Length: 297
Image (cartoon, rainbow, N blue to C red; front, side, top):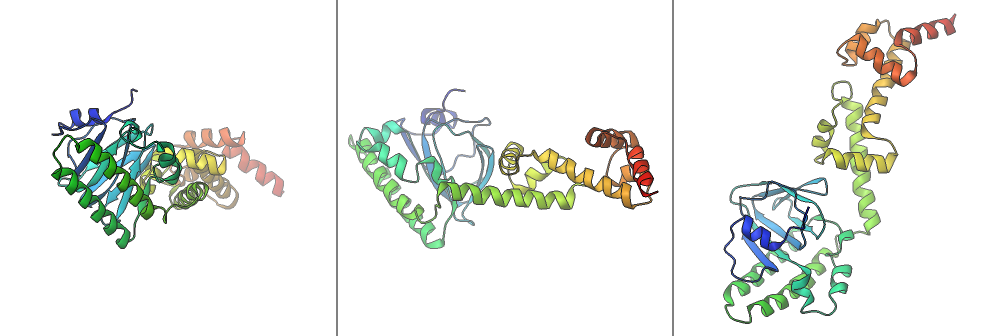
């Protein structure tokens, strides 16, 4: 897939923008959006003042709104899909590529590597009221200036103002970002713990990973990634193991026949349950129960 540019954004959404194709700012969030996955070649960040924006970024589902005082950023080469934009959504977002800033500042690499623009600093932050209001005010004043200026110096002025905006935003965001390892571990650990709890509560009637991903507000691919990385086992296998443990328990300690056990475990018939059990235990449920009985004699 070719990188998606700011020019592509302007064209697809039919935005009235008569300035550079390397920079764009938005207050009214267009309700028309790309129905496909984007791989941007630009940076974008901002806040929502009214309404809600739902996106999927690298497999993670994110809800950006003013109730949570959300700050959201995505960067070049990430995979972005816009899922929903509530009617009348308003906010403050800037989009800019490397070329736009690089032509002004010789220390562009230090800006992208040492500020919140660097990818390891995270994508989403829920801000305190004071900090959210600070960003609202900052965006508003800079956007007012950009709207007021109408001269040959507009682009140069916009670049200077963007450097100010990035610097001031970094001062606000810097207090929220933990180390990249801590950030990744904490969020992944919390999601994996939540997944395990959901499995223990629902495995008898919910074996579809879509259900668990929906409950955790993430995609199935992201669920697979964090569980595999944390536990070295797939989410599907965890659910299967929970069913297997319960089936063994019922075969050992209940008077239910094989058909009743299959029904308790939500299998459609005895054959499906027997096939599952034999695949995992190398023996049929009936033979397993007979072996248990023989050991007790």
